[in-house]
Image 1: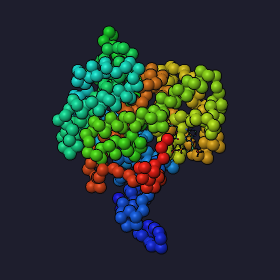
Image 2 (image 1 turned 135 degrees about the horizontal axis):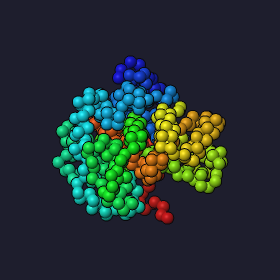
Image 3 (image 1 turned 45 degrees about the horizontal axis):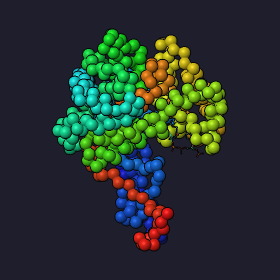
Image 4 (image 1 turned 120 degrees about the horizontal axis):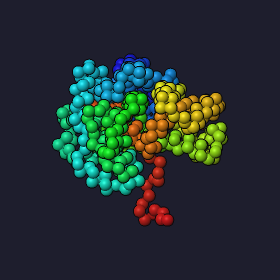
Length: 430
Ligand code: ACO
């Protein structure tokens, strides 16, 4: 990061100079960290749409040009050549591993896939219809009770073990949540299988018969995990950073991130996309009628899977997923009415003035649910799948934040807009 220019702020007849910092891709920011001490002013930016909360070397996004790179490498190239564990290594450690390093890393992750046996009772205590995101968040938080000797965020060895434990155990936790909901026995991980195959085995396998994972299915899930692995300062990652800034343990931070991801405006949108497509199909509505509803101010419906805070162009992940969606469904021989509706919705929206004007394009969630659906993954599991994919990003940001020389507790300010001094006996009662 370089500091070259200065910005001038004119307030009350005085001029204040603020440094302008520049990132490696030419993005510039006014550094306001001393603004209040110099001027008495703060910045007000609801939704943090213009606020850089940190410097980061993990992921670069150019929303106008539709660019996404992890550690400098374009997402399209990672999608074509890499695999999820290699991408996790890239994000967390900052570089691509050699074959040997990757094997060591995969081996270590494999070593930790089992859950403590008492987790069976933990899941058993949850209602059958508990949403798996609530179960995953609770289970991840509970890891802090099982590993009290690994909670110090300043101890690199404890952090590394916790990082590997989380990568290993989250798929097991998500699979357990699903098995609990359908009343099937939990499947112990089979560590001879790859990361994704093991997850699918725990999700769909039973102790009664051999479960063979279709390579095309494993490849599709691996691709989706890669595409979801990081997206710089999104809502859940910012949550992980903010919670982590209090110096609480890593498990508590990831548990909070899972909860943030659950919301329908964030990771929960993939589940909402399928609900929307199913409703259009089952209610006999046309795609055009739904688009009109999504545009209407009198209707709260939105075209789920469309729009993004950062992308004002086609989300590069959506482009890769759309192609994968056609490939996977073709290879599995699945004819999907939902895919037909999605393609039609996209065509209508992309040529509609409302969406053009607001620069609303398909995002990562628009087609991912259709692939999950074709594979037989139930809609409630879509967001836990997103969480497994996003985990390396959360971990990378948490580690980067703790190593940052500017690290301090996150604590935004506010402009107070409430009652002025009101004495107790004068206050109105209702
Ligand atoms: N359908 C219809 N209208 C939309 C949509 C949509 N999907 N998205 C935004 N708009 C409209 C808003 O109504 C608003 O219109 P107005 O200016 O006339 O009031 C305008 O576009 C701007 O919308 P905001 O909500 O202010 O944009 P913001 O950047 O805050 O929100 C968000 C981005 C939350 C993703 C939004 O586009 C949305 O709700 N999309 C649907 C949910 C979704 O797909 N979320 C997944 C995001 S990707 C992810 O988290 C993995």
